[in-house]
Amino acid sequence: MIVAEAKSLERIKDMLKGQKKVLVAGCNTCMAVCFAGGEKEAAVLATSLRMAFKFEGVDIEVSEKTVERQCENEFIEALRDEAADFDAILSLACGAGVNALADIFADIVVYPGVDTKFIGVTESAGVWASRCSACGECILDQTAGICPINRCAKSLLHGPCGGSQGGFCEVSKDIPCVWQLIVDRMKRLNLMEKLGGVRPPKDWSAGTNPSRVTKEEKG
Image (cartoon, rainbow, N blue to C red; front, side, top):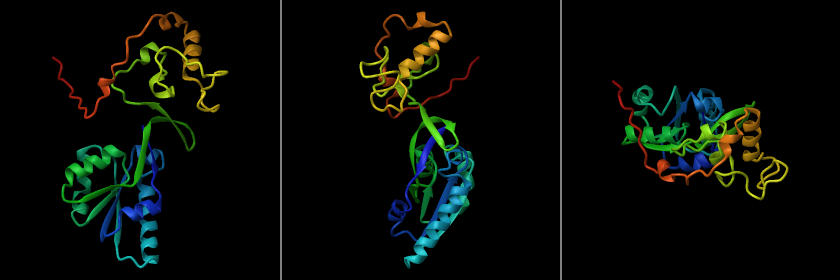
């Protein structure tokens, strides 16, 4: 899933200066899972903004509505009727959702209400970890399903650097060396022979932006 963190109330208030009618738009998939912008967070943020603006004597109307996913047009359509009545939308989706709203609502200002962090997994309650950089050229078949591009601080393709100590990254003693994890797993799976040889340089152009993927019909 995509992981994000909510922007501060002060930062959001600063973005909304000058607006008179704002729709807080929640996104009920990834953002709900990481507690950054689902239905509950949209309602709480809208209430907080109303109270803060009222306390400061700022005349602004704030409403909220949450859709299942802001990255797909069919779900964004559920916002169309409400959005037409507002000067601005505060999107609580990832950057893809903000872009999608901006594409569809050409005459309405769209603001990001969260900071998109990474594609990741849930490690424990309230803790998420990065696992994919969407680099466009997946090599997980060669590394036992553990990504050195995403999880190595230097994105090394041929084993650990000289800085790792005791199985941990030189960047932080709290970060396991991903190449130690890869070797341990390869040994467990009896796949160590796959680590031999020299891999070709990574084709970074595979992840060049802007990118588009078109699914080709088979048969």
